[in-house]
Length: 69
Image (cartoon, rainbow, N blue to C red):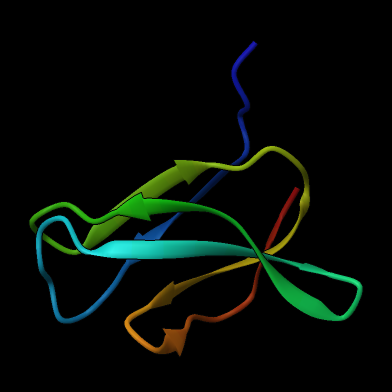
């Protein structure tokens, strides 16, 4: 059964195929749990395996923390 939990958003500047690192907050630290890529408009969407607090990193910046239930 596929996960219904998703993390999605948009990054700037838009660049098709940009790599994003997906991180989950655990034990007071951000831990890398996966990666995804953007489409031509800078949008991304990826499934996450568990509820928690996530963010994506693009270039050197970490995005805002988002709670996934």
